[in-house]
Amino acid sequence: MGRSQLEKQKTHEKIVETASRRLREAGLDGIGVADLMKEAGLTVGGFYKHFASRDDLVAEAIQSAFDSWGRKLEAEGINPVEMTAADIAERYVSTCHRDNPGDGCPFAALTSDISRSGEKARAIATDGLRRNFQGLASKAAGADKGERRRKAIMAFAMMAGGVGLARISSDEALSAEILETVRDFVGGIDK
Image (cartoon, rainbow, N blue to C red; front, side, top):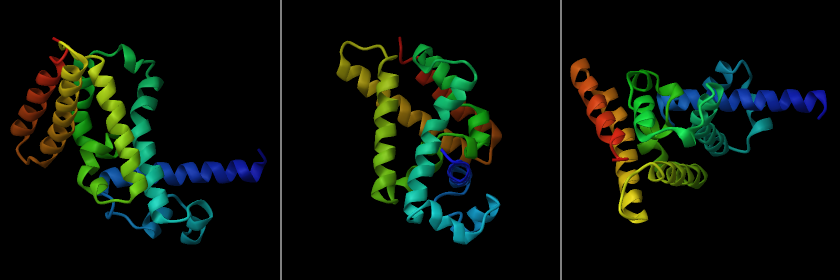
């Protein structure tokens, strides 16, 4: 790859990473192309050298957000397959996740936004749901595959919803109680 192509790729990745973080912080309508490009240190005119539309950027940013969990674990030397349900709940349903939406799960930050977004973003989110359900189902106890999958769906919905509810609460004690309750429940799906 030539130098200019490499630079273009790095710039593209910088835009996507900035958008991924900012979208989780402010929502899909919370930041415009001009603000995003300025934050990335670029001009608005350069946007269309990288993306055909804002929807294309949103789709890539959402994919990057979904992939960030795995990248973060990998950087820490953790294999997600080896994590227990309690390990996952401990990391996901935490004050750190609650307090840092820009670095967290897009489901906890953007569920209602993604439901109103374009088909590309919704397809990426649907794939993310399937992967999360499959991963949690592999850790759940149950008499059969169907029961383990139901537990996984309930656990993931509780985790994403629990973090969202904990973010809403202006009462720190209530917020902490929500996190603890969900964490304890989800951590027990393997029993």
